[in-house]
Length: 185
Image 1 (cartoon, rainbow, N blue to C red):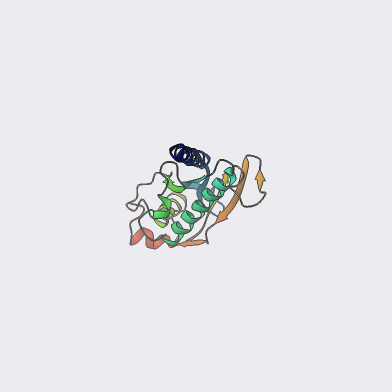
Image 2 (image 1 turned 90 degrees about the vertical axis):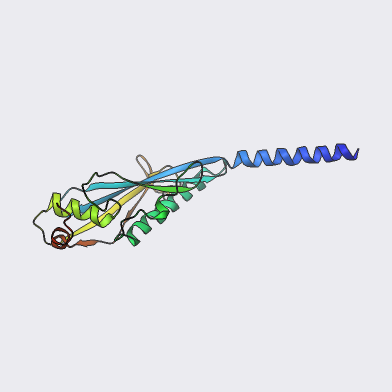
């Protein structure tokens, strides 16, 4: 009788563990573009951030909230480290079925510092758009989009849920980028 009780207890614990792991085995995602614009010039997509959240099957919007959170954290770190030639660690955590974010640069540019957002902005703005400008003010912005949970609150759009974001305006010293850093060469 004691052996039977131990067997049933072990079987119950095993079934409970399987049920818990199956219930927690979903991911959902959101995405965001990173666009830069100069007044009176069309914007360009420099890159995008994919975010993924992991959670229980019964709360898929919680997964998307986590995905949105890691995207926002990545974007904050891109701005915080804008003068460094590296992808912030917060933007390189997406792997497998777990919560994380991934930055992907989209605009192919012939620059030495490929992972420095200010270099990417300077090349686009000062070399291709306004090659004679000494200084330009640019805006970096985008939209986090996806299904419910990708935007805070009830912000439904025609193609899902989305929320806009913007980094502070950035004054690009084009003369400095051209003469001292050779960005247009």
